[in-house]
Length: 359
Image: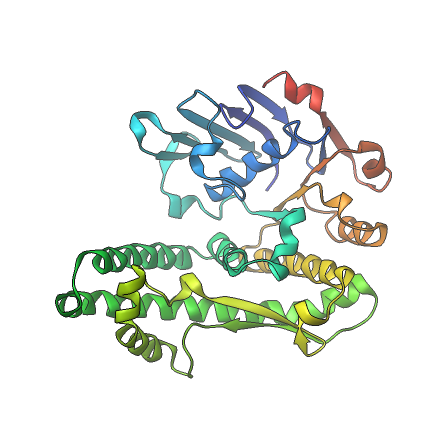
């Protein structure tokens, strides 16, 4: 897919703006805090129906009660709007003017984001790694998205019970929710494990291509229950942990609290890898994400590169551009000259001055 035109209304710093995007590369150029990332973020929000860096309400322009994003491809006009009128949140998605559900929309526009905080995939908290897995699975598998939504609904119901009952009455009320939660948790666990297995097949070779040498590496999923029978072990753990969950006021185990770690040279990557090795690992992870999305959907993701050129050395920048040259790419940068010297593909430039006219 190629997005030809992007229009935003009341989104972040923009009042109303329309941008033409190059089918190969579009550079969004300007100093920091000039609105560059807002343009790139709008494409991500259109694809995912949520931001990678902010809550929904924070996306609405100051003193407004709604925003709208419209992207026109060669085949379809995609529109996503959010309204905060009346104090609530209402999202509306249309394709060529026809209303669509979130489940039918997610995955229609494939995007892969590269940003400086991607280093947190290795060094940051588990939440970022869960988001990495869930975003990729939701973009490529509607069944997983439905399962994840159902899991979150059941989890909210169980957590509400934990806040409203004493232990004896709670045991009678919560069992049915535990059964459903365990069933959904098993599906999520299995799909995440399967995804890691596929990514592990690509990761070592991608790292070797970038670094110029091979390294033993693999990702390992870290479930919240031990044993080989996740579903039964999870159900038993919910029963055993009920007193603890009641004291905490929430469910303390499950896919919403699970993690994965990267083994590097047969050790935890955080214990042995240099900063350069960590950067190369993260870049390999993101490229594995692109490969997986293409294999699963048959479509090339739009690449969103948010100021990553300042984070990568010349060799890694060159590798990234060469590897992804046949994807539509949006790049934000403070130094257009430095980037254009390395880009061989045709490109267009959107400057901060143009962005400012719409702020």
